[in-house]
Image (tube, rainbow, N blue to C red; front, top):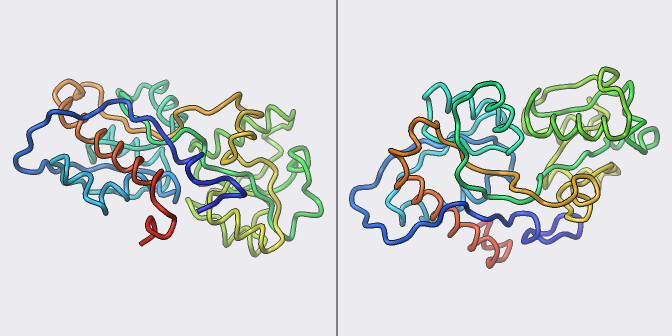
Length: 262
């Protein structure tokens, strides 16, 4: 699967923070893991579940889809789930606000978002400065895509109070396609589909060179957090979870796009 000329190997790679090894497994441990429902962010987790990597590590993992990283972290802090896989931005913001969480594994090295322009707005929106006075779609206030957008606006000298933010959940494609919003933060395949329909792109963080240009380089964008006061007791479980994600990432790097979607 290619993204704007960038092979998935360049933006879905990640370094798992803990390696599993020498573990003897008995009965599978049941855990609940919440994550934002953005397509590319969830790929290692879905692969680990579908391909049996979690089971190989002695885990039975229930994947909980939420409307963004903020919701996933709320579920973690509230005790509804055991782990939350979200962007680093969301985890840092939650920790800053007093959430007792601890990140222990990473599963992606690029922000998997692009700032796309709706086909109907392409003629009038050609730069970040042109977003002033326009309606821009995001998944939710405080989510990673919102944080990245605020950063881009500040970097371009655009007053964010002049932007009308529309919170639409993780799937913005249809709203952009029909022109309900003028621009929005999207992932693949939404970006490619919009470009095919005459849309545009202002910034593509799924491209390593653009990430270097705007952010200075790649970083551990997506990762897993646990409640801090449970980290010691769950250490063995965390190692197993990290080991499964490592296996899933290795599979994604080596497999064809057709095999991944099978």
